[in-house]
Length: 403
Image 1 (cartoon, rainbow, N blue to C red):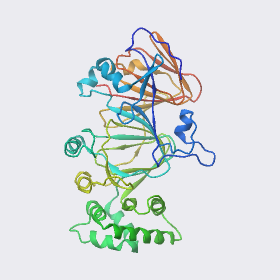
Image 2 (cartoon, rainbow, N blue to C red):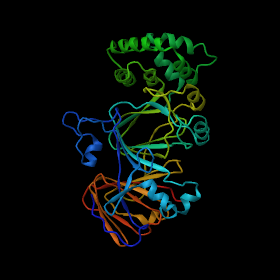
Image 3 (cartoon, rainbow, N blue to C red):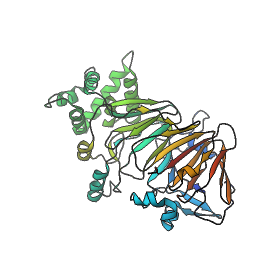
Image 4 (cartoon, one colour):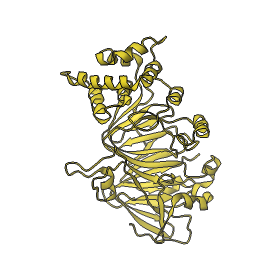
């Protein structure tokens, strides 16, 4: 833990956080002597546990804790005790009574569920009607910034490309026969028929699909992906979304923005993820959890190629801005340069040291931020600096956007 010297003004400081880890089954495990990214980042023994997500924020499911004076306190409680000082006038005026975003490191070696997130108006209706499956009234626009080569599915393909691939497969004839009876063949018609096929028929199709693809002497990238999904989820119709959605490959530094109502699934890799502070998920497959077919079909856009890899904007030497339409957050990654917090004065934010170390200074206080450490700075922080202490230091920062 970093050594912190506190000044007299408790609101104008940078606070170290104790941030927790989610060990979901799809997370990365120790293999061939290689430590999972998140365990290595935090300097913790990996054991046999999957390391899936590091959560940095005030989400009630895994709230970070403020470390101060030898004690800890949930970040949510810390903010609630001084909303004005922690969140600032702009954030409160925008209607946020808590930190409106969650920063994560996500690391997966298996596919996550095929899913989408509702827009704000839909989230409010779903939460009122079914709070067990939709636990809050917020939307969840999110970005994924690749730290390693990263692969995902996102957004529907052009319908002619979907049909062309499915027409080469004898095993999906029962599905093809149904969607070709629709008044017009659209991504929605293909998706709807898939979601409503009897499970007994789906199991047989997947068994035959594995045999049919395995017998091919040469396979496309998509066919290899679908074969891999069958191994991971042998009896799940979500495997067939591998033919419906775009394959998106990110290089380190690239990012992906997922708008509301767009289907997606992260497949493999490690990245920094940021999202609005919500737990609302509408699942379509690759999961044993609830799949709400009615809600899914009535919320997905079914537009083609709406999700794509993007490059960050440069904000001077060494600073990358990952710009997206989300009102709740913006994310920057700084490589080996000083970070002046006065530029973000008036809005709250969190920091994560991805590599190296930094000296954090503010009036009356100082801290050394080591690799893997996370930090909260309140809106009342007016004058502070993060200075890299060694070559290769890298810092991720998420803040509420300034008006």
